[in-house]
Length: 117
Image 1 (cartoon, one colour):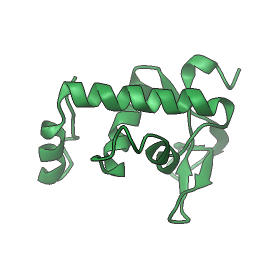
Image 2 (cartoon, one colour):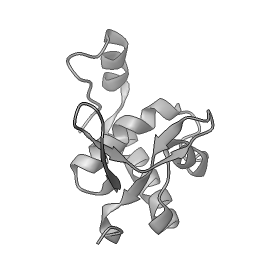
Image 3 (tube, helix red, strand yellow):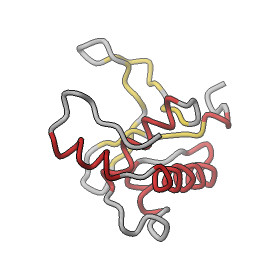
Image 4 (cartoon, helix red, strand yellow):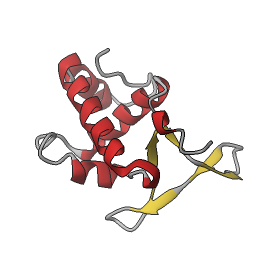
């Protein structure tokens, strides 16, 4: 599994991706899933996931969670709820809630719950 960075990402992103062991990524995946299991139909933002999993990921920065969410989404384990609106570039907009900074963050849900069907 190991961390991955896009070809267009800066060298620091590639260094960070290489530093994530498969075991650590697995721990983060399990912590994220546990958080989303507890939030069920209300979902959770990255800030909320970081707060909920604080003990389990005490040495991780919140930025470690975003790539993990994408990995879990690609595996079909988590999802975001589309609002039915689109960005100017044609991408779907997703449900958001304000994070600690006051800026909207996407809300993540467990796919296993089928919360949108």
